[in-house]
Length: 249
Image (cartoon, rainbow, N blue to C red; front, side, top):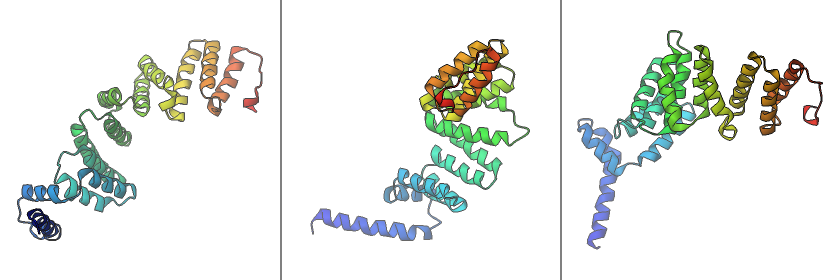
């Protein structure tokens, strides 16, 4: 054997030992065990994929243990691992613990807009289940997440809070953003934005303008039953002669 072959065989032996016996040495310093796992273990992305699969299958307690032992021991501030850990608690109805993990994930997510959006949405969901929680307190978090992600799910949460707080103009600003981004919005969210802007015009005693807005929206999404019904209502309010298109039949 060459020298390189000898080194390769020694490394395989050491790897086998570390994999099979490391668990039997709890007295090892945590940092030393973390370094051994980082050197011989699977990559963090592979471990995160495995943890995500466990969470998606509802294997909550084992997933949480796996996240702690295999990921957070190596990277205590891994934002996505903390987010997944929060999901395990939320699935078990342990909302307080879930929110704690989500907030830890939030602190470590940096400028990752996609992850910030997911964390923010989970926190908003938990807040809706807490009577003592102030939705307005979520605005700075949601607005920062939206600035980085441009996620329409975040935009509608912000719009709803402003609407609830009696700030229709601020709600209008976010609903308009959603209306302008049909391609990236969920159908229901986009329809909600259209109906809000239309209702504003109706409230200003401008049914014809509201009708024109609905018809513009129908040109973007002609199959929307929600918009078809809204158009029929506005035709009556605007005093137009009812007419029927094939798309309505």
